[in-house]
Image 1 (cartoon, one colour):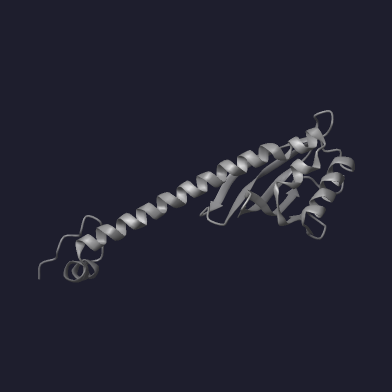
Image 2: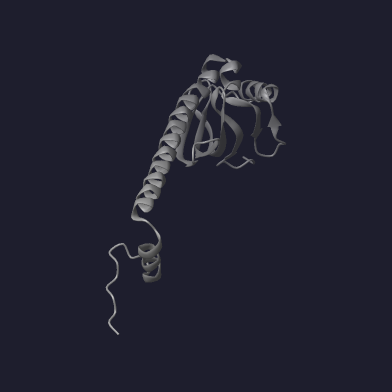
Length: 174
């Protein structure tokens, strides 16, 4: 019995036999085009989400520079939760305002920086941003830094933070 050469796309032989006998090549081409187009749409949606996240992140710390809590609050969805370490989740815009005031008044935050290392998802309803953050005081000195995961939600107002979870890289005990 003569062995048949492998197909150049490395499909298993039984699949190729079924394909040749039962599937119209035009259907295969149509399905391939749909699958490829879906991938392109997902990539475009994810890229659009990345751009929106970058724009929102640029405004986030402007809130501290200007002492304007409204800039901070509007980065978040109305049903968002800030999940800071060692404290219960703080949910809603009123909680975001309280968080802002505490960071500004109690911790002396006056500026900061987000460094996005990855954005995951399909860009339809939710994406997850992973990254690093830095916090600066009034004299521009770095006083804390850490990592974060933010679940972003696509709303009628654009991409908003839905779940914001972060932790410091520094020890809680000096």
